[in-house]
Amino acid sequence: GGPAALQHVLTGLPAGFGAPILVVQHITRGFTGSLVGWLEQACALRVKIGEQGEALRPGCVYFAPDDRHIGTGPRADIVLSDEAPIGGFRPSADHLFRSVARAFGKAAVCVVLTGMGEDGVAGLREVRAAGGLILSQDEQSSVVYGMPGATVRAGLADQVLPLGAIAAALQDITQPRG
Image 1 (cartoon, rainbow, N blue to C red):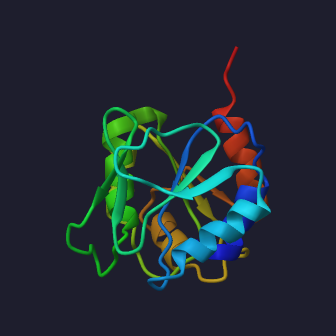
Image 2 (cartoon, one colour):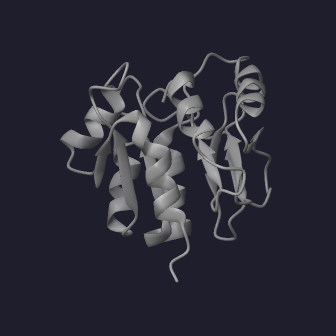
């Protein structure tokens, strides 16, 4: 999703949020560091650029470095890749979602926010097959309904929510059940 949508969701999550968050942001090369710094100042979560082999920690947001795919391995660690762009994108949401489906299966939760194109749909099919949960931003609150719209049209969204409801939904989903 766009930087403003990301800020809205991330500032709605508490410092003790119970899951790690991996982000693919389609952004001009050279601007990821500034985006990460801005979000780090704006929210209670730790926000950083992911590093190869870094263990995923709850309450931390990991961005793909410029021109690298980001994913996760079977040990819940970051796996960066220089593989070819997917659908013209590197980083690619398809790459991230595929890795999350393999690593976390039914424990995966994927969110698609405002953005152009259809990046993510193929990866979300794998998340769906693995039993993961998929949230999509609704059309009314999206600046560009491309990516969330493609998710909804493909029948992959478990919940279609306004931007203002996504952080609360994530908190509810990740709360331990007693």
